[in-house]
Image (cartoon, rainbow, N blue to C red):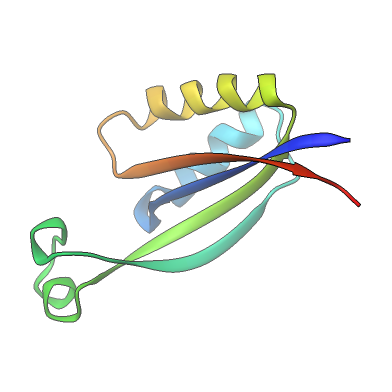
Length: 95
């Protein structure tokens, strides 16, 4: 079976908003991983972030049909249109 893995990288402050959105859209089987975004100081907000060059982020993994991935990505971008968020989709196969 061919699926898409959707990776959603986001500022950790938006975690609850994303969880609520995923559940409202009917997705109740996904994975969360805390992670850090390393970048140039200009992208970091607080002094502590600028010193360490990292910012607290989160990552959700979802496994979806290709058509579902497009619709969900559009809903997420609409909900969080002015927030720091990156969405990637990879084609995968379950073994």
